[in-house]
Amino acid sequence: MGSSTKKQIKKTREPATAAAADALSDQFQLLRSITNSSAMDKTSIIVDATKYIEELKDKVERLSGEATTAQPPAASSSSSSSSSQNPQPMVTVETLEQGYSINVLSDKNSPGLLVAVLEAFDELGLEVLDATVSCSDNFQLQAVGTGQVSTTLEPQSVVDSDP
Image (cartoon, rainbow, N blue to C red):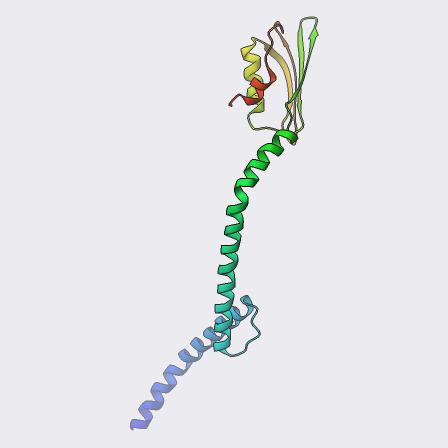
């Protein structure tokens, strides 16, 4: 009878063990494919996965080092290149019979430029009756309004003003 009890226990464990073995085998195949391993045995797959993890760690450290060393020069070069690539907006003012027409054009859109231009209009006491604005890739504003365009405003104060 003792041997029949062992057979019963073995039979009840077998489906669970087979399912676990299949799941583990699937996990090893997944690990093998992720790490581009050509190994077939489990030990070699684990060794290849360990090497792959070490390569990834080295790559992260290298890229972090490159990002750290590249960041300060990029910030300074972007500020100098942005000033050469983003000249001050071109502003033209035409006096009309009962007001003015102002055109503002910039090759690049600058954050806050529209607000700065509108604040400059307000500072000069100009009332805008009609305006067309495009702020997609470049900045373009055409405004028609009333008021006296006699005050001179430095272009730099419009460009540098905080929104």
